[in-house]
Image 1 (tube, rainbow, N blue to C red):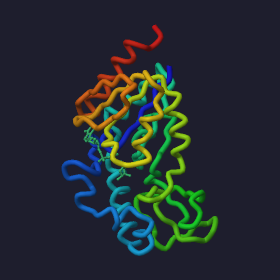
Image 2 (cartoon, rainbow, N blue to C red):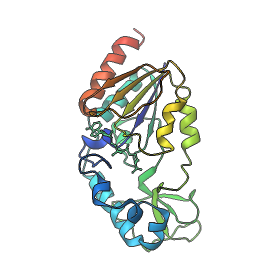
Image 3 (tube, rainbow, N blue to C red):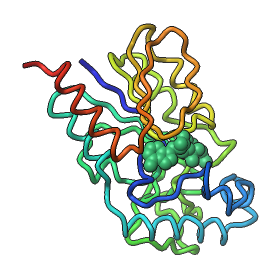
Length: 233
Ligand code: APR
């Protein structure tokens, strides 16, 4: 049985990483147009680099939480593919082995010219004057900004369309095209949603079970339930 887990900022909230929306989210203290658009990268470069430096520094000081660990543990019993909107590396650090990052990765930089020229970053601080070895262009965070293409979307949709069970953890489903992934789940495939709130999962053809808890509580409970119910005895 293949389980696809689709995560958002809420899965990392219990590690101490801010979400974007809802109570004191990042977008309550920063304007998206100042920080998370190609235009901001062009005209507000220093602020954008500073914003992601702060995120990277924070990431180095936190650990995966019980939700990341529970998702990784599912791999002992099932084929598991993780699709995340998060740019943190907490799924990797918890041991998940098949992860698709829809919106990029905080621990990498890329050429401002060629998005395929990607470089890991040591530590948390991007040197604003550093250039790509590949094409000599200035570097930028390897993050998909609002209004930019989401190169991994097709691959993610393909993965979702082959899920036998679909778990949504900690996403408001407010951002497209990421949120439209729920429409690629085959009809009648069971969906679970782990989130203290109830995001609008408008897929009438699928049975949905809401686990209205924080991910660090709800995801381990769900993993245990699935292992008991479905894992080969
Ligand atoms: N456990 C589980 N879910 C939680 C927790 C928690 N402890 N705390 C908050 N949540 C839920 C919220 O109820 C909400 O549904 O996590 C979700 C967070 O929503 P957003 O902040 O909108 O984050 P996300 O859905 O990942 O945003 C999508 O928006 O700004 C862009 O690129 C950014 O990838 C991000 C995208």
